[in-house]
Image 1 (tube, rainbow, N blue to C red):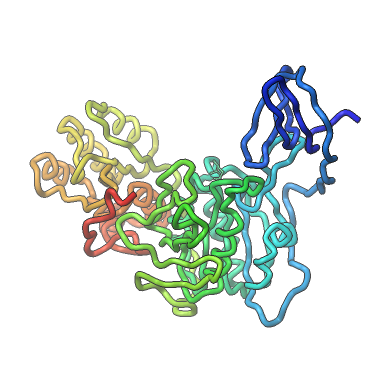
Image 2 (image 1 turned 90 degrees about the horizontal axis):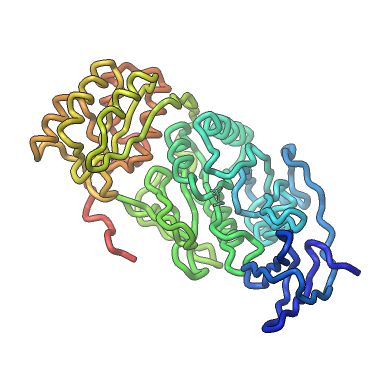
Length: 423
Ligand code: GLU
């Protein structure tokens, strides 16, 4: 019988023998997924033998209704899993070679049975996208879905999300929702078909945080390259710092809220946090999507600012150099922008430390032109905060003042030395 995609096969070439799963191939090559997760391609004329037929793949609708797991236990809390797409709890579809998400509560529990010991689950699909396709309009949908779950009695919420823009979504939700229960965003850097996958451990730790006392929007991801603990990052402080490492997520400018050991799921906290039930739920889901984040580079044209002001941008964040600078030829254009009632916020490319435009002449001139110093906020968090404040329909002066006030842990009183060169 001719092997088909998804079958386990042995491929014999003049120099090597490979065993693995047959993937969709390009015309002149056979592609095999090896057990270590990597793919090899060999010329089509190699000898190929069938070892085992592929298991049947169930057809799942792309947009599943809310699903409730079977085997509900009255002694466990209830966690809502909202999925937005991404690699977590996904599998490889051997017909297409694509990584597809598992949507129903039952799918997720079948993939990660340890979750059953932690809570009862209901799940629903909010979006099925790669997170580079996330946008402010979807944050609004997601925030409403989270609020609905909380109002319907969820003891915690897990949001599965692609890792690329997970930090942006975490920060958007941190501003949009005041929560009495944990809201935990989780992703995975490696899909579940790979032996080095982080999806099961991240999901188990996320579920344990979702039933904990930490009633904040947080991100739970691997804390080290081993499978020994996850970190619990505050939603406004977290950044993806590596393209592929499993411990890619770090808290910047503040300690993580805590860590959770694996597999014991014991939580140690490093920072104060809002406790379960301390707040009433509140949803402020308006966002102004038309805001820009410009990165200043040496010699960058200030005309970028004119373009933004004249093409309807409502707010601008400039990621400047050092303490928060741009070249002096940007200053007249900053004034041009702020005089039109468009807030201009300055952050730093340094990642660590606080903006201070009172030290050098450029900075003082920037302040005179109306820039708002973003204190020690991450640039993308300043952008999301600006979108959110503008969405609340505040006046120009109120937006400027609120940008400098701490709302959701995004600004610290003292930024310390940071954790530069910690790797
Ligand atoms: N670019 C994809 C995303 O962020 C990568 C997959 C993943 O990280 O989950 O959605």
